[in-house]
Image (cartoon, rainbow, N blue to C red; front, side, top):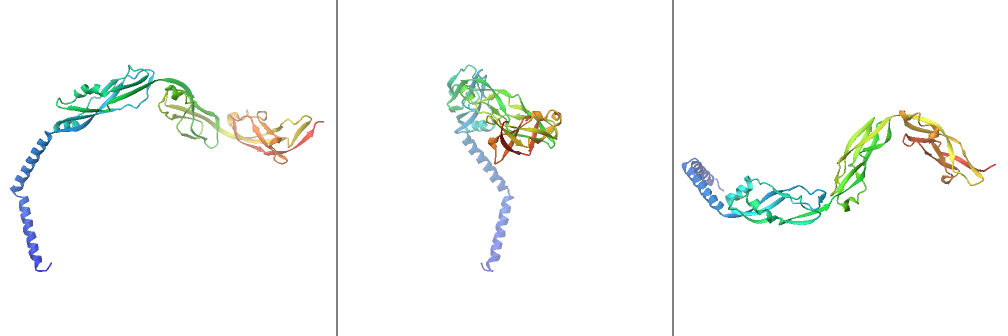
Length: 328
């Protein structure tokens, strides 16, 4: 573009800008907008008089479930109704209308399978619509009901999780689950396959004294429970260390022989709760040497007894020498 053309172009653009501003502020614009709105309204009014199709949703409720039976199939929660009417009515249905649910009484059903045609509800649905509205389709066309006889069974509850004591505390007794058993309900084929119910994973940690924690049960498909959670109770108490001297017992040797260990007494060190300190004595513990476990000339030692009162058990020494001697 040459320098001579630039003044003319600028002059033209300024002239056109003035004409546009003049039009936007003139009465002609108001007249134009008015007729545009009127024509749009007339077009919309004419369009709304035509017939259209749409789908409306009507909720379903199931009342008075038959006693002693369980529903197997998943039931639809709404009906999809395809209707036709003028546009005005359909807009009202879509944006401004709420519907009363279709209530289905299932109390009279017994063990078995049934198909309930939804066309039976057409008159109830029509009462909620304009007389001019026509129902074209109802979906689903039928509701399938399948009832099975309900059975019950008592099963144990199994804890699923971690139990840890606080520092300087020892577990006092096993974890208690209350109730230890619950009743489950369902159809016989499902109930017979269940031998226990587990809790959801739970952590009972840093326990000092008594911890009582409510824990939910893991749901089982198509099974209901007498309750959905249990109490998990764990007792603990402060512990101290104790050391006892315990004789080493051996397995009976072949006839005419005996087994002698060196040493014949060992020390057993363990943690014990303060309330059980005096209850755990040497005669409550058994340190056993079985020559069948021997590694070379030494037998590793095992200990039993008072398992519910002690932990962190250490035998000193952990193995002993042995010889087999003839009886005198």
